[in-house]
Length: 227
Ligand SMILES: C[S@@+](CC[C@H](N)C(=O)[O-])C[C@H]1O[C@@H](n2cnc3c(N)ncnc32)[C@H](O)[C@@H]1O
Image 1: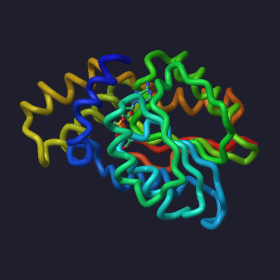
Image 2 (image 1 turned 30 degrees about the vertical axis):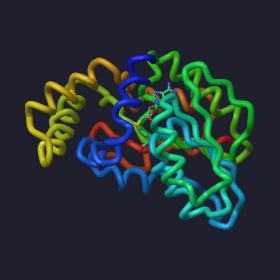
Image 3 (image 1 turned 180 degrees about the horizontal axis):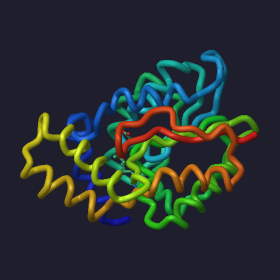
């Protein structure tokens, strides 16, 4: 986790610009994530944003759900500082500098959201254990949705995913930078899991109404509800 923390500490100030060039249709993906919330817009929902980064997800939640109470968590202090600045109009948002791989939830939530973060949990078991913790932290009828980098069900599908991801990046990033910098970081730091497995884990944990509500090759927004 030290390497990942260092990466995001260093990238924090450039993050909002870089992410638009690297992640296909990032704004649309986050819009889909926020549309997963099934509650009326005036409800005082309790939300946690796991790996909040510079606060983009929380900002979208606050714009749609002004009465929501949001808790933001991130391992990188510099990302949290930028989030605090971006969200300075919302003084009721709380922040925590913590490592999710060692995290214990101390509160319960109506909505657990995460974007481009949980693929940093290293093994399948780490992800299953963490999704189980999320389930226990949810209130009844609460939802968990994750917007993340995922793996295709077999090698040909995954190869096709990678082709389309690289094609997207090539619109604004050189082939050399993609391969030497971004795909290298992806191979070194990212541990995405097969989407199909993750949906099965959610079912085994007890989630219902599991679905994939947005997808572009190896990026997907998926989750479910706790009855
Ligand atoms: C790619 S950024 C995504 C930020 C934000 N969710 C977004 O979509 O714009 C990933 C974020 O997850 C954080 N992160 C990675 N591993 C983490 C961990 N183990 N615990 C807490 N935060 C973590 C990083 O510091 C970074 O801010």
